[in-house]
Length: 342
Image (cartoon, rainbow, N blue to C red; front, side, top):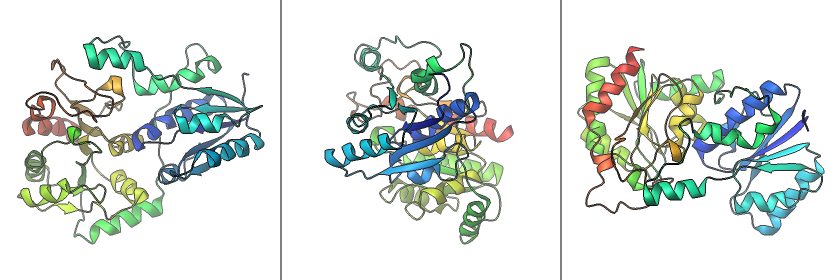
């Protein structure tokens, strides 16, 4: 197969990984411009790709769908007659769906589990020097593309109407100027920086750059409240008050986005917004890091114990989590200053 006309891409979570798959979609669309590309993901993440110029249709899957429902979904996809299905997740859920493919050619991503195990357990890095989550996600389609193909950047879409709504929302908080976004929450505590350090960076940014700080996150991101009461400067805290599309629109209007290794930083880059990311237990070998040349990473590359897990879920086994406590507000503000100066 050299020219698939209809393509189904599967990736169910999470925000950052789904954002990275848009690079694969862009690459496919560049080399096969006449193809129609559909996307399958969990229903709670489906809004992420709304309006995407390269996505023809989004298939939403209920997170609670059981084996029978997933098999049925696979049969339904088979009936749609796709030329090619690309599984960029390769989990139990996606494998059940792929069982329904009979005539549909399907390919899947292979996870570098052995290399990751050696990296975490023995601190032996066998990943290539040029490894990135973006290059890894292109591996299943290498055989379809020219020998020296180039990968596309990630891309998300926010409409003009959504941008206006986001600006009006912020104006309700008396924000009518430049602002930056902080996403301090994370699914795992090991990836979170301390609230008082965020507050220090916020105060320095407000004093030097006269930009408003806007905190976003989920309902459970209580660190946002702690940052707000700790900072000396006024802070707009809207965590838990915006949906996924509203959060994207707010980020789209920011000067930069700051936080640990979370999906909204990748989303910001996909909209051309520079990111300043703090890497603790994760690294580029686990899918972390940034890709825009304007973005900055703060990490201790010489710390022997990191990375220690793929997503930061493993509790630190040292007396102190040096990968996060070692990051100082001055380092972060210095990185922010370079981003703002660009």
